[in-house]
Length: 208
Ligand code: TMP
Image: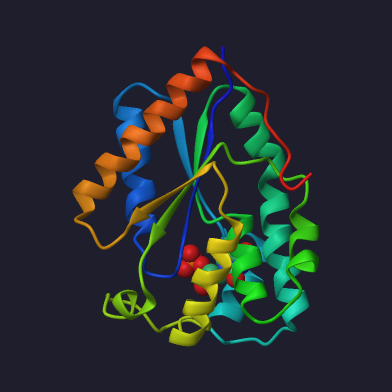
């Protein structure tokens, strides 16, 4: 049996990642494809609780410490993620190491230093980037509550994401109607699954 695919959603805050990643998993499951939704940060773990306190501005941490906690939060999930992928489950992940680098580098941290702790994570097979200008994102409900939801920060984050894109990324216009976005992403995901079934490749290692 072919392993599952690792599909990642990235984008600025309020770009619709949670809605679209949820819908993709539902559509895949509905079509008989084993798929599971994950989200980073996973705020349910001990490390995730520390991250949550920082994001909600209840606790303060140095830029380096919070960066490493975000990375540790991915590493603590990695054994289970690899096991799921190997057993044929496709994982759809709402944010991953690209958010880790984009948000920290937007704070003027060295991108090479930022990448280092995530080197060797499972490599995403596809990345869907939901692109929205921060001025449009700011009009959406819920924007502004957490530490990074500031216009200047989001503009810099978007630029950082752009500098990381390669051929495994698809940029999707996040201002479109939600059904339209879902249709485009589902078609791209199905294409990736078909290609993988015809020509399966082992799980790659990120940034190695
Ligand atoms: P969320 O809104 O998707 O739960 O993400 C919480 C915030 O954390 C969001 O502003 C992006 C930021 N973030 C990082 O700074 N580094 C990371 O590694 C991740 C996954 C998220």
